[in-house]
Image (cartoon, rainbow, N blue to C red; front, side, top):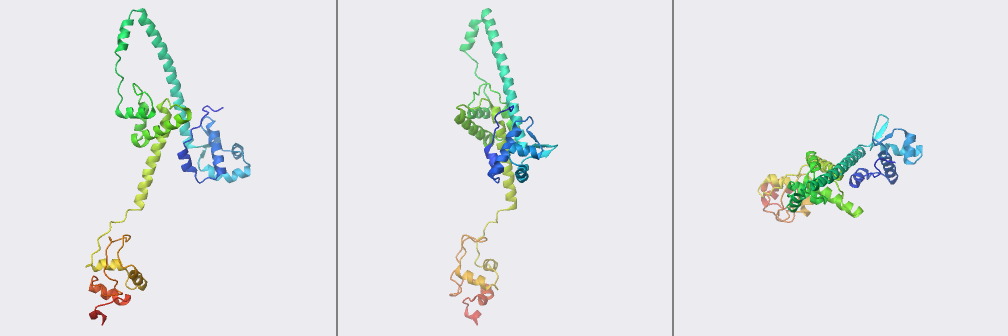
Length: 314
């Protein structure tokens, strides 16, 4: 039997990494993860016959599946290991160890309290104890971040240990982007599943650090994309008196096709890459356009069949 019977599966991360797999490849990968989880150290022998039997397929079928499945594992020293699976295993192992230690501490504390109570009654200090109970000391106030944390987790804030929060923040997790959303999501899931929230902050550690990794990787990917695809320069207002602007808009004067196209689209629309929307007067193929500078008329008019002033047309 496995040391930890339940294997936590973070569905968002799993699907993000495996959407390219077929149903058969999904089945093989999940079987290997579950069988590795049952071994101390989360590792499998690098033996094709053993792996084929583990997946439940023939050696021939395993040879076809292996190149795809192997990409998720690190194979060295004769063993297959899955990095994320090992991290989750260590997190569960640490949480179970802490829970056991806390349980032992709780038992010792209860025994010590009972002994102290008996000694108090025997020494005649019962009245003082009663007075103290009627005027209890206020609970130690945690920082505002810790208060929000315990509220999200549904745990009692008074005197609670915030070492998990300090560890998450030291590891680069963000309170608003990683910690609180993850705790709220997992708490809601566990309440729906079992009727009660997790009883320890340590339960959330693996998911919070995973959320941190996804956020930082997404930020890096977004910055890399922005570097490769810089924003276009801002559009400029079209200057009717500028021959350079007219040439930039009209294009090559030797292209008759360009001239015919512009005759059908004689305007600067909102989709133009360089200029803000602008009207250009009448189509120069139909009648004389006084907005067009003389040198542009002389350069483009004869080739594109524009109506020219008499001085240019003769």
